[in-house]
Image (cartoon, rainbow, N blue to C red; front, side, top):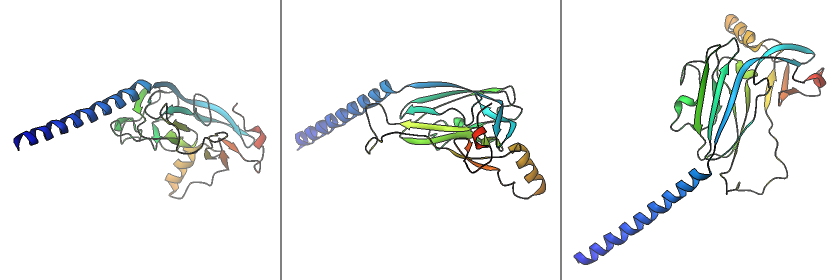
Amino acid sequence: MEGVLNNSIHNNLRVFFLLSSLLALTSFASLTTAKTHNHDFVVQETKVTRLCKTRNSITVNGQFPGPTLEVNNGDTLVIHVTNKARYNVTIHWHGVRQMTTAWADGPEFITQCPIRPGGSYTYRFTISGQEGTLWWHAHSSWLRATVYGAIVIHPQEGYTYPFPKPDCESVIMLGEWWDANPMDVISEATRTGSGPNISDAFTINGQPGDLYKCSSQGLLM
């Protein structure tokens, strides 16, 4: 009986070590294909023209909307943020699971102090078990009205989406535009206790639709 038990234990140990080795090899293969993406985000004032009016908007790298980030599942993002605007700012990676990197999540005064004007901060986190399109945006007051962009997460290299590949892919971001400074809009709403003014236009990828005046002038100046 003792010999049978010993053989059973040894067999179970062999299976355990075999499974452990396979998992280790799988993890190693994932690590070898994963990449680290470095990006510089400069938060700054930029002249933007919409609806026949030009105003200084807070943008990232002078773009409205900001740059689209493309990664694969398992990749690491390193974002160096420099704040050249006159407001405090943080960046939130909306929908990204921050399982072991809560300090990179971005909500102001919750997971980090704001990045003050003239300051900088580096976000570092790994995309784990996610595919699809998410977005990033400022998480300080209403800077998110103009400081935002997309995060496109492709499957890990060697894998595909669980559906046929589409003929084409396009990022569509819905937003709003105020002729006034969004920071002034929310400040006035806070002062009066009433809701913020209705936005002057709805936008698709930062552009007002054809039903708005001067929609053809919606170019970054």
